[in-house]
Length: 269
Image (cartoon, rainbow, N blue to C red; front, top):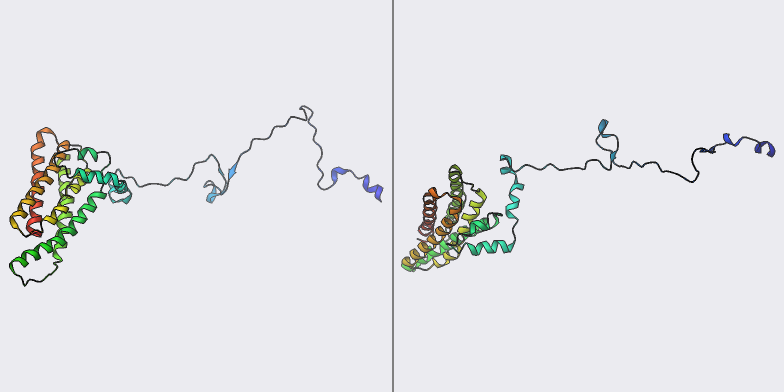
């Protein structure tokens, strides 16, 4: 029986592989077939995404909302670049706002205007006017009537909020459309930045308006209002043509003076 099994042909055994003889090539030369690497999971081709994606295929991309059209106004991502400023840049611009006649502030914000500084300046001025306005009213009433008791008028906050924020938003917007009509290359963000930093000088000066001396109060507010108006007017000149310079600069100067007088009359009567 053992001899009969040894005489069976091996080509019919399970797992046996017949030898392949290459008569035309040397037995030592061998070329590996070109690899075609594929990645898992399957790509989106075929029915219901069946199939595999090649390594050299396109990668996944995320669609971003375009900011150049009107839809960018309602997209919060289009405003993130105006808050990408560090402390040194904001501090340098704060110092420049105390130089009313330099006129170099518009050059500093030309490449990278920010809204971080103007928002914090405007918000701080609102609360400063509301708090110090109540204190100034109490001191003046106390001077005439010693029996006057302290009371906080919440209406000062509402008035300061609507007046200061309304001025910082509407006035630059009006000058932007006016200069665009005149053919200027004005930027609305730069105008908001310019007018926002122009309000900084009113924050420390409001402390001096607590002095219960009416003549001194008027002198302080007129001088500070003129300094703030000169800051806006001197930096606005770079956006205006020579023939329209006087009208635009004079209008900006008078509006800034009007804001200073409003602060004195309403919050420090």
